[in-house]
Image (cartoon, rainbow over all chains, first blue to last red; front, side, top):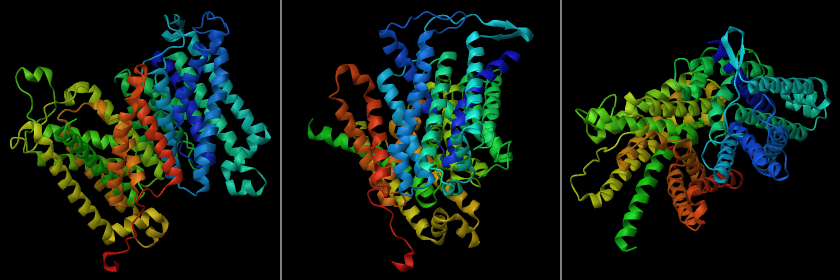
Length: 304
Length: 322
């Protein structure tokens, strides 16, 4: 049981990264980004591309850092992938969503466009890499460490938790301390008021997409390190991501963090009685319960 | 290809396009007229197909029961299958509407995605329900003893088109009634509609259920056309996304438009198959992805450059004012 909870926290921390992005984008743009899961997929595969492609060609060594199951290549590919997917998210906004916003299209049209973008991303991944499961580093998993209470955890998973913490703390500091972060929070509170105080909304929107995309990429790569890569991985995350952000009150990034951890733990613990393939359905069930009992989420009374 | 072959090809094309047109009509009630954002059509597609399959086939017995398991088999006629599919889809839509229809439209969207995924997972993993991933085969076709099996598609095309026209007339009638005007009022401005004393939740629920019942019939028509169904058919791509592209391309809020959209987009979809035939051998296996990529790009183009679709919405004030 403790073991399942531990794995649930690792899975939940990955969900949190995605859910924070969804919440941030929803908070600022009132935009339900249905392509967020596939941005995760894009991040995972862009990292795979660099690991098996350019980084191998220029001779970055393939050996691993003991006791982890990855080496320099992933360390280099990770930030590149975050930047690239941040760029992809900004590009989608410039090419598609901004045009629709300017035309005065409704929220549903924007969400539809995002859904289209998600299929486009997945199809590109499928065309290039095919439908097989892939790994960053084929081979045996590192042995798990034995912790008290019978908890087994792999060194990779401890590192995932550390990386997620660093990313979340950086985002927190960015939003609280920097001028751009404060402007983003102001825009999230009231876009019209922010515009009147001289905040350049378009710039905020670009930052929002960039951060959301980069966090999604990080989530995708970390999931790839922890489990494996698959073109449908992001789509399977979509419901957990939304469940987490709704649970944590959509628009509230700290709520999304907690929501992600809760969804991750419940999903993992559910595998004690259900088939693991039912994980998305478990997240869906949690979401329906929240919508029935407390649609504003646990940190409720949030801005609408 | 000789004339007979081309004709047979056109007939099978028209059957699939008409079945998709039924889904488009269902989505048009929900989205085109009421503004309900259902992106889990695949779920209703799947349920409709399975319910009708199990209503019209007998429960396997003897040795056969070792290979095919299904929770029930009623061996009733085709028409009862359609009815059952519609009723069950309506009930599912009602249940999904309760938690979501009072909230912002995005919640309905994510809930319908959830139901579609959950339905597919359940049919895939619960072998006792409907034979798991292998699905059900040998579904009966109505009036199939009248003609030689080689010509059966002509009869099925007539059946599908009659059902499509009946549904079309039914929706047209409903949408021109005061009920239909309330739906469009809700789509345009929920607050002012509720200020006119209309119970928004009830009307949205009726629209969601009505649309889902039509989708259930579409699923049943599909099941008896292909005679074999398995959960992997009802993916978000084949089951939801392409139907949305059809409705948006044809003109949401216009029943003639969405039927046209179904035929045009299905034509484009089939057309891209010929296109990918020219691909080099190594890319052949990935041709379906390239075709879906093109459909995705088509959707983005329509949303930006022709958001009203081919026909656009008809101005319908009342049947008395035409």
